Length: 207
Image 1: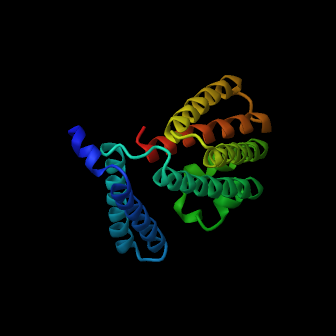
Image 2: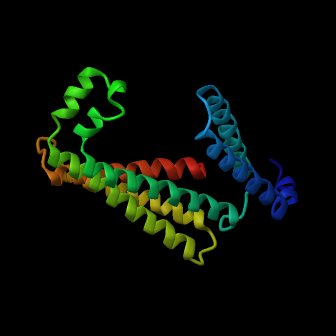
């Protein structure tokens, strides 16, 4: 896109448009939770369309990298990771056996049920607690980023992604696939949380 067009649209007007699209996407996500299956697919398509427009605008119009758009995206990521941290912490107390026998019983293939029930309990607990604690560390990083006075917060996001990739690689090197104890599960869980965080950050900021 020519430089003069970027300058013409840069600033409050384009940022207001981006914020409006983000707000509409959030509303659709709320509606998605309380609708029938057919309408869910429709709302999901609209939500993805809004996300595409937001990502395209932020990329093409060179928005302020420390402005409200970035702040909203970071706040949304914090909510996502906090929800994941809570869910994995609760799962560490529930155990896979209860999941297999619970409300998802009919959705799990028979072979998978058998394999899940054979997973040692210590490994399960370690896996979910490792993921939960990993998410909590990521949340702290994002909260510190929100409070910082740094102008280019996107650059900080890129640094965080690099740190998480390196941390995951270090954790992977400590895992012995033959071990099925709590420690092994914890390392695998924490490693997974960092890898999933990299995917979320990359998708949110089109990095």
